[in-house]
Length: 215
Image (cartoon, rainbow, N blue to C red; front, side):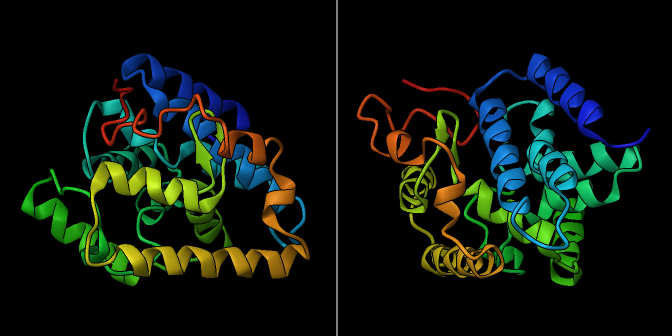
């Protein structure tokens, strides 16, 4: 089965039925951000960027989990022959290519951990990997946001880890990379980013690490 916009959107709808949560709307905004930025980047397909953004968290279909959703997404995509989407299901969490920079909990088997460790270390990242990594940090379930708001959102939920600041620096580096390619601020390509970033009614703890909305 070919991975295109239709099949990706259907896959997300089915995943949402299996495990409803704020992660679904987050995925849609990530996909839209990927498409908008790709539209201004030579050599990056808007359609492919959108589809890969839509699929990055598809592993959450399997239920509430931490880093397990990465390997669940990888297997989901590989079973369907979607190799690049499978890579991004893992790579989106590792802007630094070292599994030890994870901020999540490895709720996986030892065998799966070793597989992911090797996979991350030897993956060849391209602009699609980098774009999804960036856009994952530009999207809340309510819309687009400043990177700093998303950084705080994630840190409140996961805590501060030894690699936290280095991960922030890497995302800021990727932002600069795409701004050089697009010739503009990425924020100018994200409708409503200012309003959503400063919306006082949004409870920043409302998007849990499990993908569920919490009080």
